[in-house]
Image (cartoon, rainbow, N blue to C red; front, side):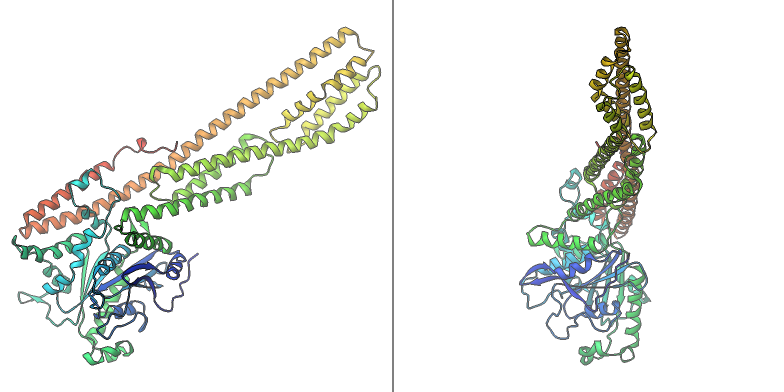
Length: 597
């Protein structure tokens, strides 16, 4: 069932109070109720550059995010506005407006870097908003992108390849799409006398400068980072909307009062965001919904608050812990529901019960497999297997007890009249033993004919007869019509009959044990089968992600070669080779990795 989002305006998601970042429980509560996938658009830029105006337009409102019209930064921390996606009915658009970077009142820019990093980590589309053209000053103001390697970790612990290549090589696989919005843009879009598009202008502005001086390195570094971290880039330019004096009234003005070119440019920007912004996806093709985004926010902010670097792998694993635990409970609830509907105790045979268990178990495993991800060492699936085994054993015990109780009541009803007749001495007379045996056989037949006795019928009957052996023997010995020899023969017959019944019960017990062993093996094979299929799907997904990353790196390497930057090209080649080696490891035989024991 889809959740309905009732946010009439934005709410602070991450507060920035006295230089400390804290999450807002009320905003997290809103996220936790969103069951649909989310498209997360975050905007970052210097204060007083009109970021909030664009976000209000994306929300379809004139007012909402605070518009700063003075030299003070209005937005503090990160503010959130969740609205229905205008182009994707089954998605929620999450808009994140961030406090202006470079606010003179803050003094310490440490939190600016964290705000910048959080916006990248949480979004699927990252909008960088700036004033004027893309010149060196604009690039210098975007120095935060060069600090990302000091602010974000992709892995919780290094492997052997991490010593060969910068960890930031992994950023491209999970960073958002990059959109640069240029406000109050006054230049003609042309190069070498030829008209160019805004996207071509951005690519032209990101060209590197040959040289090895420190000045050249400073020039190239932010450009290299943007090209390396954000392979998918888009640029929009905006004319000044109104005369400077009217900017303070911008949210009150109608479109016809604004510059017509600006209105069209804003419409094109919104259309692009609505059409091209992707659902937030985690490694492994995991679509992010509200609760998952909530978990990411909590994990990242907690890491920053404790002095650690936010780590993508840790955030995903923390999310997996929560969801895999819930997946186990969801699977068990499904099993309980299915067994509750199908099982009527006592079952006539053990195999009948085990067949119902197997069907319900298979469905429960399917529920878990669909709902779980990143189950390291299959710990949660092992927990599910253990709980399902216990459920099966519990049902077997309940079935045994239900059968025992049913048979005990039947034996009491059927045989109590016979016991009363024995007490009254009806069989304590000549010929009484044969009469007693005949009656006993009739009552046994009646017991066998009763339905719904379950698996304990034979055992309970034999236990009852054994408990009455002294009574039977007393009647035999007092019957004066029988000779001593006949009595001895009858005693042996009863013993043989009892031994035969015991052997039959032993054989039945062995058969039940074999059925249980077969069921345990089937359960194990079902777990392995479904896990193997899931791992195959995950492997295909991983290969697809790695192939996409490889293609982007090859594209950037080719561009570097064309521009004559051989050193940078060699570094990229090293990253490409390590990625290719990782892709080979994906083909490691599943049979050696897939176990639930």
